[in-house]
Length: 185
Image (cartoon, rainbow, N blue to C red; front, side):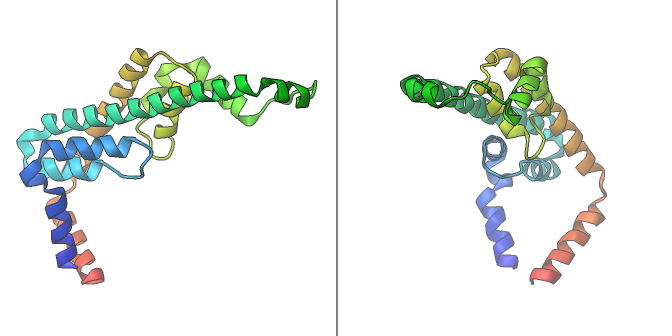
């Protein structure tokens, strides 16, 4: 188990690579890939406490760019969907009934339109944050307000999460590592 942990630390190489690793991990974790960036930010700040603000700002930038990639994917998916519907509209009109029932997605899209870009303050939430960014692009919400609200939400998340993790005593983390070594070693 020690070899795996050592390999993982060498692969991430926070002490060697530093802020670029934090940026890359934050960017990847903001796309639709399931990866958390908080441990990387916390680990880097734990190794270099004087780099707290630099790490938080770099992680915020990477995570926000990843969120805007999600926004762009939603925007482009909408354009592709509109082109598809335009090409196939004659078949759909013939099949569509006169009484259209509202769909569940209509309800949620309506709420997102009503609240607009400020809903992206929640873009940091696990599980729903990435889809929120993609839906904002799908709904063609303006990118600049989306970018600003997304940045604020992600910045607050990194400040709060990293600070909270730093307040936990080192003995707790040492006990966690001892437990993991006992279980996997």
